[in-house]
Image (tube, rainbow, N blue to C red; front, side):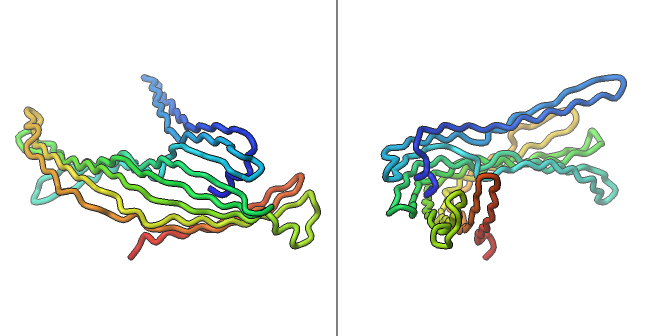
Length: 239
């Protein structure tokens, strides 16, 4: 968030990714496509001379996307188990930056994490008289956290670099955020002839899970023809 202080005019950005796949086996032709939303950000300079910029937006934080099919056999029965995961967490943020002196920028933003993750496990058998089952777990999450950052843009001057060269360093820290979790499970039983839906629904008491703190540091070296960046991020996922 500290780097917003370098903006001197209103900036609006939106991102999306479209993927398409065309299939032709000589008999039939099919086209599959999907679009992923990658974020929306609006930055408004309040006082460019002092590096005061307000920014708000929404961006993806994490994504769940898997589809695994496993063939299994037990006591003479062959069956398939399909694991499907969809959804993810997005983060909406509101923050501001300001400049301290001529080359130190500070920034902070309030983060609101929210999203839904759906995990489906389907067991199917090839024999019509045998029953399969589907378990759908829907997890809804939300919580509030903070991110703080700082940028020092005067390192090039301290090292005596030419005016057309610059060397900036920055650091960002996000605190541990406790997300409220609401879990719901729906279980169906079915054969190839009939489906009992839903057979059982269970809603777990609301609980909390941690989103671990993270820290990142980086540096950028620029000339009139060259840009070189390096960064490192650490997040304590394991206990």
